[in-house]
Length: 112
Image (cartoon, rainbow, N blue to C red; front, side, top):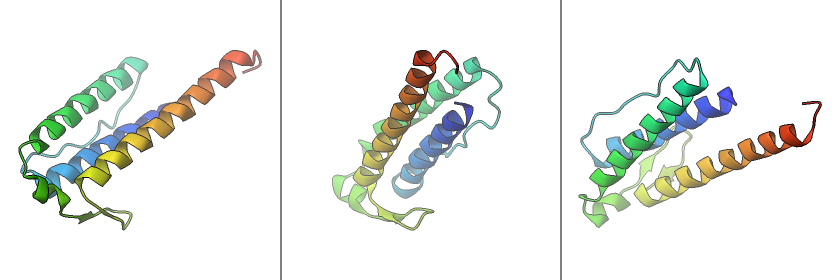
């Protein structure tokens, strides 16, 4: 679970930072390195949520045509604002499904 959480945090900050770098003149943040406890992870996810909301609110002030300008990701794909947001949503949903499967497997198998 810790690895999935770290991955989700890293990707969440990366996605928001792509939007901030490509369309906004806003400070970019890195995800927190240390997750020592569940409460650290929850606080980090809450902070990511706030950071993402702040980014999306700022994007509302950008002209629609400006949000269609593509940018290249570190994995070599071209994205525009809408595609990056869609990608981020689907990515997080995939990990939510992965976590649900892990939790359901553990709760239904008394040996785990």
